[in-house]
Image (tube, rainbow, N blue to C red; front, side, top):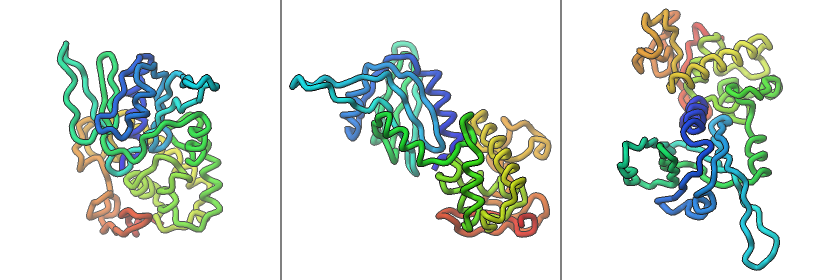
Length: 280
């Protein structure tokens, strides 16, 4: 499942490519045909990401009732969650060439003036009204990549929990957007073992954790990939690092700091990696 930096990068790119335009929306697969019909031809105002969720805000519209009753409000916010299998495919128009034929089961196709995107296999693809949007956002913890994030909310949830910090970081109601790689790598950088209970995390450790997640995930947005390693350690800029060089302990056999073996076990449904020598 993509981690939060991926969705923030998509939101940024799609804002630049599609916001302010009247877009053609369709559902080649057919499973989102009604929603696509409601959105097509309308102007997209903005795109935002919250954790691993992305929201497309269209200019509000009301459906007129053929019976003469008051018009029925419909959702004007498209909510997408990729889940394990969701994938965006971006297209750029070359001259007058037609858009490519849909590949696979395309749930959603959005076409703008000079770009288009297809969405395959999302976990969620639905329309929300303002109240539904608010409920969806309120279920999530603070997102380190958002200016409105409240770290105190995450701290309170961690401070009062006996659950391991490794499991808490995978709980999107604690901190939204963090996935398995950021969990493993950030805890290793800070010397915190994933098994340590949340209520044993010190305030200064939480502050360091929050700040490190902001730093690393912003790097992820900029480069559109997770990069943990320090360029000074690798001897090359982040843009030139290979996939193996970008990470420090995730799926690695030995610790880059002490040379000891990396432990691996399942926590919160995913395999976590840690160094028992360097992390307490």
